[in-house]
Image (cartoon, rainbow, N blue to C red; front, side):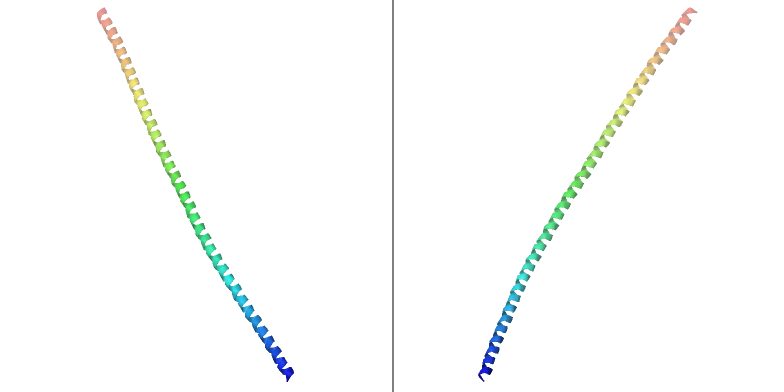
Length: 131
């Protein structure tokens, strides 16, 4: 009987120890799980922030690219406008030069014509007075 009660006590202690170990293991598991969940939540939060930062950076860079493209487009337009203006000025200069040359040629022709008429008149008068 004593050995039976001793066995029961030993079994009871062993059962208590096993129960305590199981409870400790469960608490350890729950604590580790909680830490892992907290770490995962922090990691998710960090990834969300990194994604947000990356989107903002991408938008900022796209704004810079858009401004640069607009600047280039405006410069191209200004350059074309300037080239058109220079071309217009050159055409006007050419037209003025052509008119000037035309006027000089007309004056030269008129001068030659007057000179020839004068010579013809002098010959006519000389031949008239000779007869």
